[in-house]
Length: 118
Figure 1 (cartoon, rainbow, N blue to C red):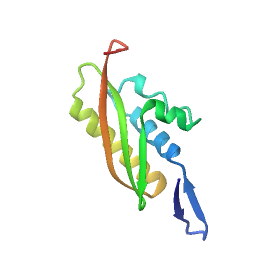
Figure 2 (cartoon, helix red, strand yellow):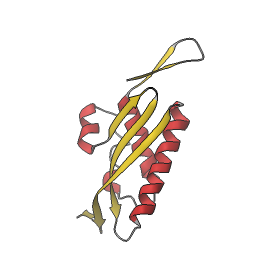
Figure 3 (tube, helix red, strand yellow):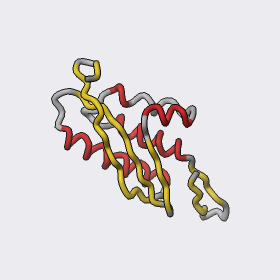
Figure 4 (tube, one colour):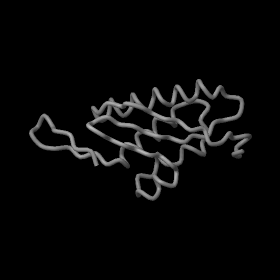
């Protein structure tokens, strides 16, 4: 859980799971990412769910690092899709939380061919 001092004089706590949801939702916006790696954004439920989809969040000194596995659609340019995911995730987290994103590591674990992973 990340704690931020609020301008209102209190503390704001942001759970790692919330950061994972933001990252997952931002990933949904990228053309070329398969729907199979988009399942987490709608389910804020539990840490177990975050672990099952493999999103790893680390916050040290208000600097966020993420590792995010994705599945891409066949015939996409992997380097372009992964760069766009990195940019969208970074922008979304920084805009929504005020935290700084140090790195977004992408691992392409599968390629979806006509709706199935390979």
